[in-house]
Image (cartoon, rainbow, N blue to C red; front, side, top):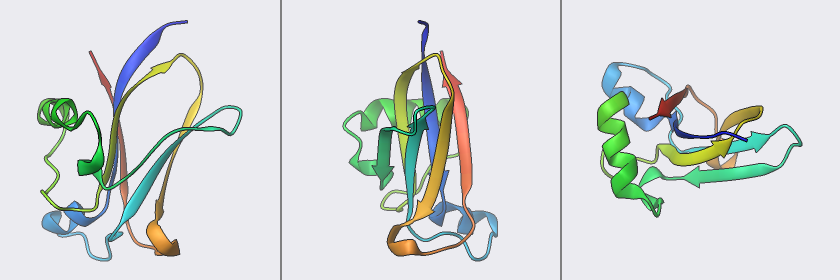
Length: 105
């Protein structure tokens, strides 16, 4: 099976800088496969073990996330298949969030 690398983000707090009101203050991101299994998850993008690589991919494809923001992001390789990206609020909070998926060469 072919594996591809993706930058996946669940942006909430950084949206306020773009004038979005009611942005989700603390999103968490889960990537779920077609069998319903969570294959990757993130809460607070700066906690990623591959943070330097994630930052580099972000500068290529997307607007930067603010240092210290509680936005969620993952940079990961996935085998071919169907996936769902789920963004929710920590502690069942609600608000507006943006889900982004970029294929990284």
